[in-house]
Amino acid sequence: MAVKENITKHKRWEDKLHLLAAVVRDSNDAIIVQDFKGNIRVWNTAAERIYGYSKAKALKMNICQIVPEDRRAETLDLVKGLRKGAVIQSFETQRIAQDGRILDIWLTITTLTNDVGRPVAIATTERNITERKRLEKEISEIPMREREQIGREMHDNLGQILTGIAVKSKSLELKLKHKSLEESADATEICQLANKLIAQTRRLAKTLHPIDLNGGGIAAALRTLASNVESLFKVSCQVKCKNNPPIQDPVTATHLYRIAQEAITNAAKHGKAKKVSIELASDEKKSVLKVKNDGRSFSGVPVRKAGLGLKIMDYRARSIGASLDIRKGRNGGTVVTCLFPHKSNYPDKWSGDDQQRIAQ
Image 1 (cartoon, rainbow, N blue to C red):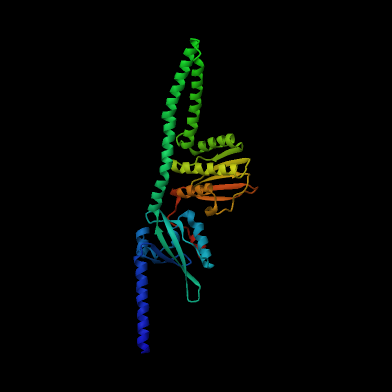
Image 2 (tube, one colour):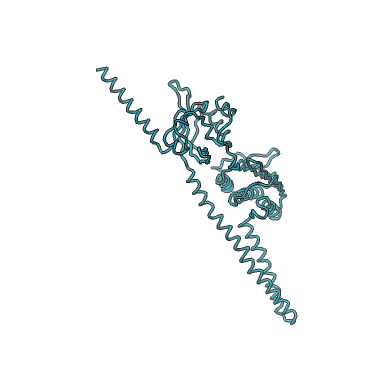
């Protein structure tokens, strides 16, 4: 009887193992297991489909070979935390496919332990959300494109019509004055109102469509923003641009501009700042936008608890693949930093030094 019970229990365990293996094999999400040196030990069918590497090839790889350069520090920190027993909530990150594409991934991490509770490996469930992110980005850009179109229409068409009215009114004013008619005063007033409306239309058009990539780009737009800020909020605002930022995408440039605009507005209205500086620097790998002020500090506020302005800034940064950091300045005030990596600089694998750092 005891032998029969043991056989039955053994059969149940076998059935459970087969079921678990089927779940891993047939999951729609990539399921990957790696040791604490980053060596891949499990690579399911979905991982083959998402990343393009066959199981045979993946099992000879290190996980760092599918991690973009700008995610290295993130991965190293995660591994260190998992070694110490940290629990990591699911989060969004990026990975590199075999063909070099950068994929947006929703990552869930689990630490695997042995019988005595010692961490022995890391299991990840990875969902490809690249297409969803692309659609979200397209949808979010629709209002921006509409504003730009309205801005162009106001500047090109409405502006021309108003200019024609101003010219005609001036001509009428001169004719009436020449005839010494009292109505010339009315023509003068119409001309003045038309000129005011032209100026206001141009300002509104500039607000709706602030960046002309062929006319100075984001650097010129930020200088205009600084000038407007000084006039509107009565604060000192300086702009420093190092190198010419290689940002040719109007959507990306507009998002960076709006981040700077929101940071300055927060500093002036809520932080009571007197001095604001905008810095934009670029190198081969990244562009960095910094907005510094001498007002009240807003550092350390979690985005989920922040006001609408900070949430919008964070959303804009994430929508263009940038990171946003808000912290207290060395001499007080707040420093808002937006780092935007250039997508063409991702390597296809990590160096041996980076792999060694994971193993440490």
